[in-house]
Length: 218
Image (cartoon, rainbow, N blue to C red; front, side, top):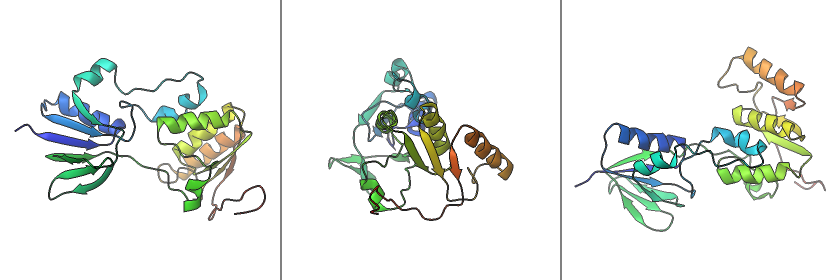
């Protein structure tokens, strides 16, 4: 019986996992569960070139030839709703049950919103997918001001891109320094200085944030 490996996640990690399996000689079935309709693509350009270039194309991870040679079985656009470890099955969002011999979870991360009302607000955006970048680019073209919650790398990259688009940016970071988990205090201070020199209003050490509409309603 042919072994089957199921990869949950259609991003870079899932793509490189699939390619590495083939490169290392795995000849069994590789199934990929992805919530988007696209082939594997790179995520870092979403906060940079994808926002700035008028005709930015999907930043594919592999060429079409390499992608085809991986010989993958796609389940897309689908989400993995539940995993039964005893039965070794994954329940998909369309109700289908997908059996596996080995399972790899490569879903990546999502933005952590301060509250449930943020997710419902029409002017609150998060950046995870290609379509998120397209929506944000359209919005930046119509906007004069942008507030960014989060002073990590993605937040800083979006801030830099927005400034290049002529948008006024205020960046809020809950921690006392930028990129606190990944760089030293000196590097963080340099990052803050560099972005302020580009016109970003950097505010660190912020407490809890609330949404407030123009009419004062929260």
